Amino acid sequence: GAVVSQHPSWVICKSGTSVKIECRSLDFQATTMFWYRQFPKQSLMLMATSNEGSKATYEQGVEKDKFLINHASLTLSTLTVTSAHPEDSSFYICSARPTLFRDRGKVWEQYFGPGTRLTVT
Amino acid sequence: GEDVEQSLFLSVREGDSSVINCTYTDSSSTYLYWYKQEPGAGLQLLTYIFSNMDMKQDQRLTVLLNKKDKHLSLRIADTQTGDSAIYFCAEMMGRGSTLGRLYFGRGTQLTVWP
Image (cartoon, rainbow over all chains, first blue to last red):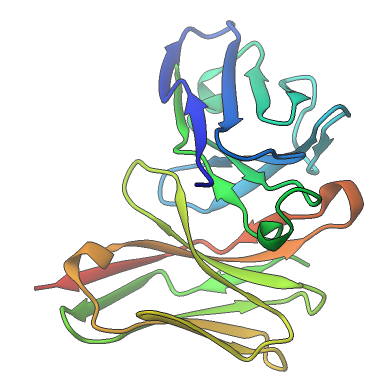
């Protein structure tokens, strides 16, 4: 149990285009999902907290108009990188936290997707 | 703050124990985590410890928490070559709608030699 998927696993796009990345919790409901980015040989940097049915909370320094987050259901959050540029090339990882009321024993566990490698040319 | 520090590299021989250390700065952290990342993959939750605990053991893994010194360690007994990976320490922060935010250290690259 506790599987999180991401799609696509890798994507190459041209500068100026937009790319959507999906994050799904497959066997549990997740009111809250998180988006991270990771540069080579570096740590994960939290970008934003996504709550189902409400606006995402962005970390300081993350452009909300560039990284659009939508969390329309308890099992799906999407990150859209708009007008992508080469400096947006990175490994994007999502995580999902089981919903408080449904999986009380696991509420403090957080499960990560396999990541999406974005390359902007 | 949310600074989490880890040493970057650790090498051990197969069969030995590995100890990966981590320090964090925020005393209000409620949960502390250890994740494992293999090349090109996402993060695998290994274990976590609540801040009112001193120790947690799970098979080959032992987590020690010194809250006074804000020091966390992960001991892997009988380390195997398959344990070679990057290990991340993380502290959980946030309140309300941002509860569950994790702040990560830079990761420790564990290399296990046969």
